[in-house]
Amino acid sequence: MKRNCSDMLSMRLFLLSLFFIAALVLTGCDSFVIQGKVVQGQSSSMHFVSNDNTGLSTVGLEGARITVYRDPDSLGTKVAGTAISDDQGRFVIKLDAFGAGWMLEQFEIVAQMQGYTNVTWQQSLLEEHKQKTLLVTMELGFSQPVSRDELWKQYQDLHQPKKSRPNK
Image (cartoon, rainbow, N blue to C red; front, side):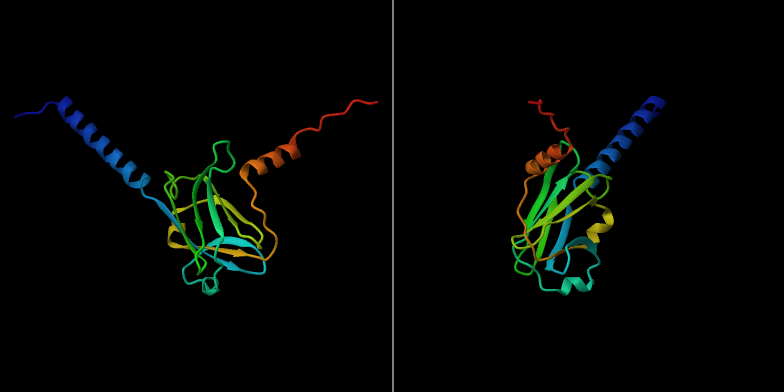
């Protein structure tokens, strides 16, 4: 039985389409997991470290809220994940955000805890971060949880021209 060229081309396009769909499903549906630890320190910072980093052996802080925002500089900002640190200071956040780890988009991670200053980190989440631990160092201070709506209002107040008042 002989196949003509159009049948062969159709079969190739069909197989190529299946391969493309499988690649999208396998890469896009894989969750990005952030594993981290919150510790007390002299200054606040947040960065991914190798799993043998000495900072990870520091006593952890229980009760810190870690929130991940996707696309923080746009009007479509969404919470991509959140966690509370356990009694060892450890936390795990599973991001079901499509493309996290392989698409170049911005994420903002905010750590808050009563009695400590807030810590913020904004960057792309890269594939290499999956093999590392997010070390959050919080210094003693005052922290008041600020909603994103309140931050937006403060930004608008600072950047909108002041209305002139009529002279009396």
